[in-house]
Length: 249
Image: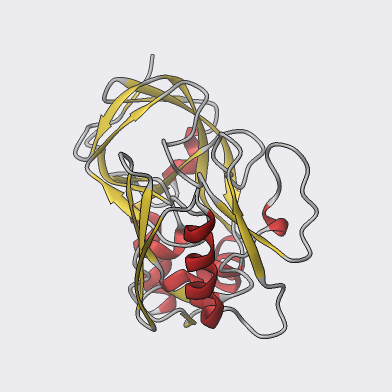
């Protein structure tokens, strides 16, 4: 098939930065380790135990400047380091009171006026993915290229907040994988649904400012606002950038 796993990304704090990985160990039924492990609760959130929908958290769809954050997580120390073009770098421990205070002070100037403000970081023992189940998002480099061509620009990868980027597929071929299983490295992932997108994808992640209307162009060109697919890990194992995905028998 000539497919290749080109990139692996995780997002330690939901909507607050991304981190590229060379390899990762997947577990059945779980998202990437430490992907969306923490989420930033805002002042009007109505939380329940366990997973909560994204409306309870600060995110790039409401505050575009957040899209320009990059993140690095040191798993051994559980320290997160954040960078942003308008802020000094910050390293902090999200599970400590001092770390939370440092983070809230750091992110406050990036928040949009009139929006609910962040009040704390939470973690619930699973990834706070956009889906109620622990999902891994799989995206297609070719789909990104053709959409960028329609918009007349290089869209980059960060605005889509994806986990796994595949190369070698035809544009939009990822939608044909629904219901199929992919074997990547030692793992298997079942493709379960398409990803409907939000306004965060309209933001240039180098500046944190809206630069194109991805949603309008998707709708005009293809009759939907979907980009990428969600998958569930059915068999755990290590995957590496450069692996050759195959359709499982």
